[in-house]
Image 1 (cartoon, one colour):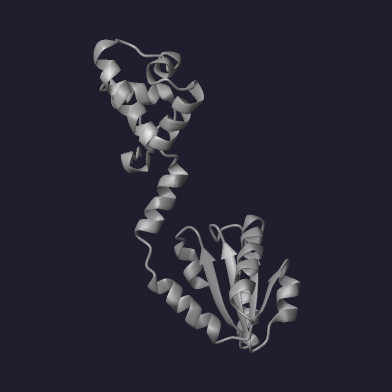
Image 2 (tube, rainbow, N blue to C red):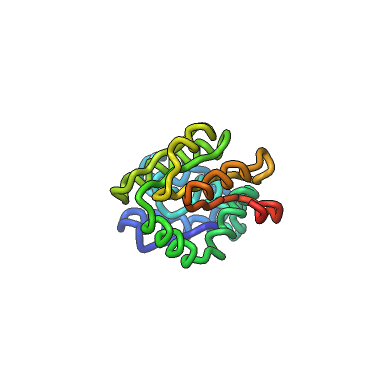
Length: 193
């Protein structure tokens, strides 16, 4: 999305803009070198002004001056998915999660593959905001040695389809540990875990 804010421009940049608007009324196509001549400044100054004003390129800016609509770049599907997630995010989920964290002394994070990397990053972030014991386990055997009745096991999974977590959750239940499964995709088969 193009965001133009003329209030960010210096007096020179504002003058450049107005000069080019006036010149465009008399000249059919103004190249960047010609724009620098008309405005009495360098090509570099024109280029910097264009970017500061909110355009990617001079060509995009001059097209706008001549009344052409700027080409809006289509967002990637991943960016659209992230935007939709943020727009519909329920902040009460975070509050509930914080309440769960506060009830436990030891936080154990676990996941396979890319989910393991996410768990490690989450560990890093949690260590900044809490004095609780936070660790990421690399395998189920490590998780089992860490679990006790003061533990909160948080398992990360993109889909929940790579490997079942039912054994590790059953073991956690035997140890009176609490568990939470965080999954990127909605998968009803995870409800059994």
